[in-house]
Image (cartoon, rainbow, N blue to C red; front, side, top):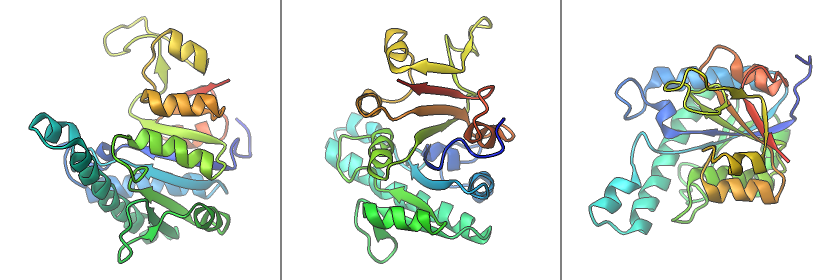
Length: 240
């Protein structure tokens, strides 16, 4: 593993569920602190970090739509939920001594900055972590797509998708003991083998703009740090 990080600037995509406790719902302060500690570990290596966070722990738009809610309304509720998660993560990071700014595509000027690309870049250059909320600011787009879009806008080196699995496998490792973890994949291989990495809009955006994607087990020991340092024995990197 290299002594220097393999990436200067990353977009870390966190699901809202990552902030939930054992119940799978709500914001668990202990879990928020655990996530913040891992982000701090990477930040301490000099890596510039933008975090894009979901809201599945607070609201799932699909449930509203299933009951007849307008898709736009359901998605807007989810965007607001991401801001709550972002504020919780900011609080945990700040208490660990990591200066953090929350920016949102859905303007809430009393609680967070509006998302402005150049301001986000400036924050990172000054050593601050930026938590980007509000998705893309538009309904019908997931936070996966928001992560891909923001990565391109801020000229990140890679999108890191934090999961509970240590990479992309040839099959579900929980169901198939012969499943093999891929260290690297091409975009074409992901499509050919129908490997679910992220939603198709986000994946296509990354492919078209040659933005690498990494899938890593965020909660496994120091896997995130090792992956950022270029260790291919953890996670899976997808690139051209």
